[in-house]
Structures are given as structure tokens and as C-alpha cells.
Amino acid sequence: MDIRISVEKRLGDFSLQADVAMAGERIGIFGPSGSGKSTLVGFLAGLQQPDRGEISVDGDSLFSSSKRINVPPEQRRIAIVFQQHCLFPHLDVKTNLLYGYRRCKPEHRSIDFDALVEVLNLRDLLRRGISNLSGGEKQRVALGRALLSNPRLLLMDEPLSALDDTLRFQIIPYLKRVSEQLRIPYLFISHSLVETRLMADQVVVVSGGAIVAQTTSEQLARSRMDLSPVGYINLLKLTRRRRANDLYAYRWGAGELLISAGSEQHEALFELSSKDIILCKKHPEVISARNLLQCTVTSTFISGNKVGVELASGEGRLVAEVVNQAADELDIGVGSELYAAIKASAFRRRG
Image (cartoon, rainbow, N blue to C red; front, side, top):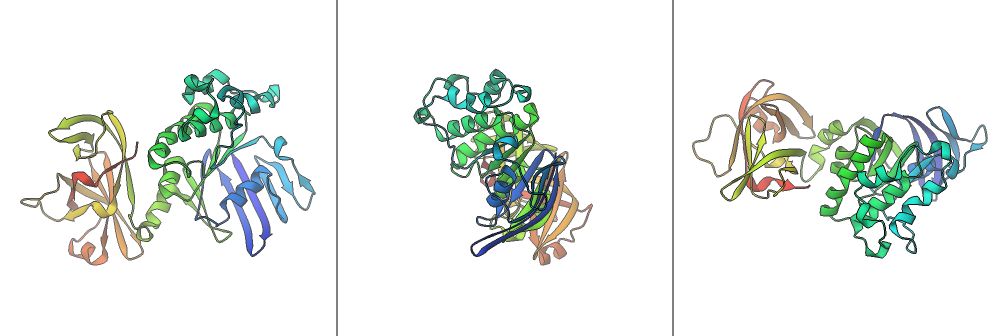
């Protein structure tokens, strides 16, 4: 999908000026609270009107101040899911889901109700009242209602912000599954870098009412490594779990990773901070860390006063960080052989 936005808007003391062209199926809008992300999305959905400018989707003009075009929201075929679910409390789940579907023109009805219910795992919830749902269930219903309006584009405006970490990482697989199986492109708006990396390929960065960067989610994470108190977050989807005494062992790279906070599931998502990886030039004689990986340096990058070091162990990849002095003392360069030491307690399970 091709999206073009070139707009200006003043809201009191806040001014938004955006000129960006986006192309893709999984696009992220990233930035801190108050940066203008939601305002930008509101322009695209038709919920707010710019002072001047142009907005188009796949060549269709949705707004043009010069041509006096402003397509009403209900005619744009753009659905939006907000931070709050905004479900109708007097309707059950099934009736909420069908609300948009019944108002969609028959020629646009390409999404099958039963198929969507299966994708979002809503079958057992259809007769429930909204007040009898958990936060995660409500957000899945809100997503289903938006999708059953059969939009050409889905906007998700901080859809996970109101959920705790457990629910947040339970919902993300549903969001991704919808995109993959129903082939609906989306814009995912968030101030969370981890969420953005999991949900988006291309990212538009918004700050102070302006577009300050357009990059990939991976490049964004590397560029912000020195700005984050947790550094760069390695996202590891690990499989083939087994018990190893009081630890969990997962297949990874050329061997296994030993983790204390494992899961009874055979597949799980873990976070590992670049700050929690200690690099050694030689094999240490004795070390308390349960993971000692022999790795090859495949690339390095600079982020502020830190050096990011990409490591390969078989097919596995990790990013560690060191200060410049350490990089010099270890003589780190592409092709260098290093040992990476990681505590079993350094991994945080996320799904």
C-alpha cells in the first residue's frame, strides 16, 4: 500500500508539519507521547482535518485543501483500533463484531465472519457481554469489529498501551496473524520500541510535530541503543525446550541457551538486553554465567558513545554493547572470535 501525507496543522501551541510517503503492508509510526502520532493518524482516518495539505492512499485523494476534497471518514474504508476498546456495552460480542460488517457495502465484504472468529480465537466469547471479558479479550473483539468493516487499511493507535505486559504479548501474535492471513495492510502507532519492532517492518519516527526519520525497525533499535536504559533488546523466539536440572534449555544457534525463567511451552519469546552480554577475548577458566557462547563478530555499529557488536553463533544472532575503550582492548572487528557470557537469569520471557 502507498500512503502519501503532506499536511500542516496548528493546535494551540502545538504545530504539526508532516511530509512523508510510506509504502508497505506493516508500517510503524513511532514517537513519544505528545509528538503528533495520533494527530497524524486522525488526519488519515478523517477524524481530524488539516489546515492545509494533501492525503492520498494508493493514488486516491482523501484530502486536498487546494482541490477542496475531504472524503468523509465512513467513505474512506479505513478502520481504526484505539488504546481503549470503545466497544458497545449493551451489545454482546457477536453483535459488536457484526456492527461494522452490516454497514459495509456487499461488494467490499471479503472477510468471512467465521474465518475471522477462528483467527482471533473468539468462538467461545460470542455470546458473552462486554463486561464479562478480560482486557485482552476486549481488545481482540475491538480488532475483530474493525476488521469486519472490511477496510483497505487498518490503523492501530497505541492498541496495547492499556494492557499489562502479560496481556500485551498475548495480543501481538493475534495482530500479526490477522495481517498475514487476511492480507490487510496496517499502520501500527506506538511509543514502545519493542512493540514497534515486533509489529512493523518500515518505521516513520515522529518528534515535536515533525517527521524526523524514516527507517527500518531494526535500524531504529540500533540507532537508539545508547539512549535506552536497557540498551538494545535482542528478541529471541526459542523452541525445542527441555529441562536441565533447575533450568530450561532451548535450542539456539550452534547449541543451547540455559534460561532460569523458562516456559512450559515448547516455543517462547524472550528479551535479552545488549547490556547483559559480557564479551571475552579468551575462554574464561571458571565463570558463574551459565551461557558461554563462542561467537564470530559479523558487524559493528556506533550508537552514541557505545559500540554495538553483532555476534553469530551458528544461525543465531545477538547484539552486545561495549564502550569504545573495551572495543579497542578486545580488538573487535568483523571476523573476530569472541566468547559471550550470559547469565541464565538475564532472559525475560515475553510470550
